[in-house]
Length: 262
Ligand SMILES: NC(=O)c1ccc[n+]([C@@H]2O[C@H](COP(=O)([O-])OP(=O)(O)OC[C@H]3O[C@@H](n4cnc5c(N)ncnc54)[C@H](O)[C@@H]3O)[C@@H](O)[C@H]2O)c1
Image (cartoon, rainbow, N blue to C red):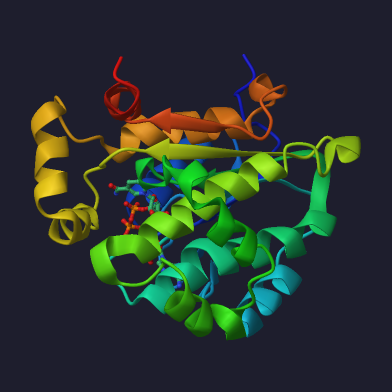
């Protein structure tokens, strides 16, 4: 039987650790040729590693130039936790991700799939529409000013929350942008996942994180998330477009039920 990703070339950013590492491993196991991108070196599960700091527009331009034409999928997994400086969080999690993806569109094969790693932290995106609009054309040089003038700074991990809120909105907005070429974009929103940055979330969110962990049966594992990403990269998910899929052990439903008194 043909493997699900056989014949596909998939780019996985953040492939050196956590969810990206597991996504790269699984895509390879499902038959893909995996091109890894990270600021850290790794050779596990990847055909080739492209070293790149995704907060740096010059490095992103070089990366896009170096990657081949005909890529069938991008898993945008690289990301920083809320303990990193707000400016950097927005650059990597939002501005760099968008710049990289948009620059790659001409190099993608028709029918390609883009999957953005958002988060449960982005669930309340609809309450931040004004800032999301203001961030639509945000460039690297304007991030410091944006952080100062919007609810996207270090306090309470807002930089992280905002980066994921805006990423979910951006994914929805691009439901049909490249439909003539069959190029799709979706997001996956994990709840707390046991990777090296889980402690950073707990540290930033304090009592809120403790309460989340109390009601959950367990934190997620990278292996809970990667199959959903790999499925979205496969042709089996061809009619799933512009959506955000929570993979969180039921946590987003729990929060929504509380929010709407269900
Ligand atoms: N772990 C969680 O609880 C959780 C929950 C929801 C969403 N997420 C999201 O999942 C994604 C992966 O997180 P993870 O938990 O696997 O974290 P991780 O720290 O294990 O992996 C993140 C990877 O991104 C890379 N990276 C960070 N900054 C970079 C940069 N400037 N340039 C290139 N690469 C860079 C790191 O080197 C690392 O390999 C992130 O986008 C994160 O926001 C994680």
